[in-house]
Length: 490
Image 1 (spheres, helix red, strand yellow):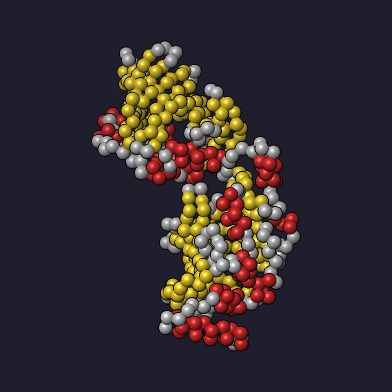
Image 2 (cartoon, one colour; image 1 turned 90 degrees about the vertical axis):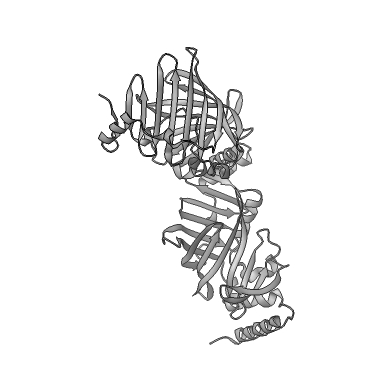
């Protein structure tokens, strides 16, 4: 049976709905929000909770694949700790006003500015009963249909995240919440539509929500909720790695996270969106062998689907080529002849850029760490260690502190003679089609030092598809090779 207070509340809201439909004044925020508190358990029940632990799971709507799995623990004093298992192992939280984050990929960092403010706001636990002190200037802005229900729309003020909530006029319950979430790439609009509710220890809270975050759409399920199990401050203490980083930061010795450094390079180079529109590359230039004084002309074409072709014309020695039609990789030289090989062994001179790898670099690595700030050729650079997803390939990168651009890379280079260490130094960039492109590259490998200078860089120009067709002799070799096995002429 409904409590007397809830019956009165329903009658008040029903009368408010009738008044609204007839053009009367909207109800005050207290009439809407206090009724919601009452409908979900009452102010006393809300304030009896000192800590809350919620296990959640997010599932993709089309495939039902689990895309989010986390445990969220918050305390009424503002401390919080969130343990995330999926999409990557990570944690974040707030402890005594310090907002922090840690990921297996990039390690620890401390949040500052608006990101810290947002983290502290998000750590507020069970704030529904405290809306008057937290959002004293809230307003009821109108009444409208949301998800099949006639609702009052409430703006929670002041709130930098521009939080709005819609409450069912009939039941008083929350129907939808929207807010703005700041990210490294700008602001993202988030909305949560409540699909189901559940009672737990005298409180009713959402148990299923449809979430729209930017262009993502998924369902969040609350698997379990427990109260008052993590009330001690020690439950929210900083992890040791975060505590060490915070001490370094306060001493002025902390280095920026590798994640931040890589994202800064992408932004300084033109931004992820510019790379996502990159469909083709054609680059020509000269390659100087500095020890011998020999100069070679080189041309490189690449496009989507892994198609690639590069030629190096060596005076008196002929043409050296390599490429891929998207499935078969190959190379051909006057000394070694033609060879078909696994696609993954393509090397090239490093003058092209895989746009997909730029935009989705996190999917290709298992760990990145900032190791040091050091001078390279008189430039202050952050040295970043990168471990490939398979854990086998480790490379080093040096990013300039002054402008964020990549200056040097040290990595293993696949060659016909096996893997060899190589160092590429990007000495100059040129802006082409909104992207800063490396046009002077110094290469050190196998005791040789080479200098590439680009004459022409053309991006997104049409490329004749015949450029990527396999030469006939490569086609014959590929037809005879077994899967993953390199073949060559006898």
